Image (cartoon, rainbow, N blue to C red; front, side, top):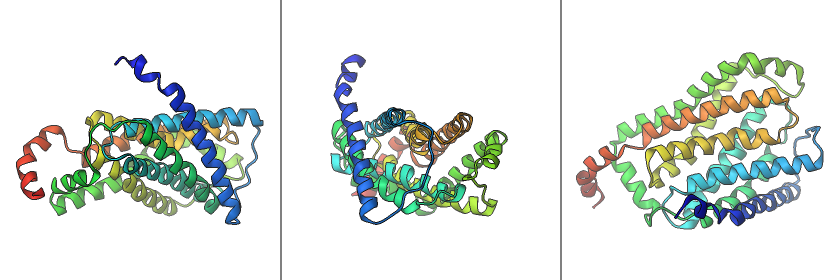
Length: 297
């Protein structure tokens, strides 16, 4: 099948996923209202038509990112959908809200988390249904093989290094763009720079959350290491930065661009670190097959 033939079905799949995100957001707003929560008050200079266009663009990036991840996940559609929904909700909804809570004075954190739950679930399940699995394997089989690949001590060390990977790339790229973005924190009254100790705690907490939702992707992955790096890079970049920055018209363009480049670099490096630490190369997997079969028997 040619690339053109593979792309044609997305002429209706993509609008369907965008519609699912829109419906999910409406359900999220209804949930916020039902719970009596208050959303942050944000002043935007964009008109309604511009906001709609930006929402559609953000929805397209989310769909493409999730589809890239889904294309390498084995298992039943609802398991894959749960993995995708959990990834999007935790990284996009919870992770970004945690950072918003310490870098801004906007408030409304509980409402933001509640608002992101319905769209994450809807689009996660829908993308898993629309994107075929690469194999009929089950997550349980992948999990058993994953934990059998290392001794408990070695796995604990690798997981510990994985937790430290995100803070490492976060601060590395943050320092690179600091001269560009810091002046804006003095000009915009809703932005704050918290103490370094607070930033360390927040980044570590986010790192643990990101690892928890990235690990199922790694365990269920049935494609190459290169494609896994691409999927995790795109998934984290879109969820952590691109989708939100596209709609953040209350940020100056320079600030949005600088943070976008920062998050892109950090996402790629983080994905490489996760794959290197937790996804063994094919040669090593083949060499371990006899021992794995004995341990899984």
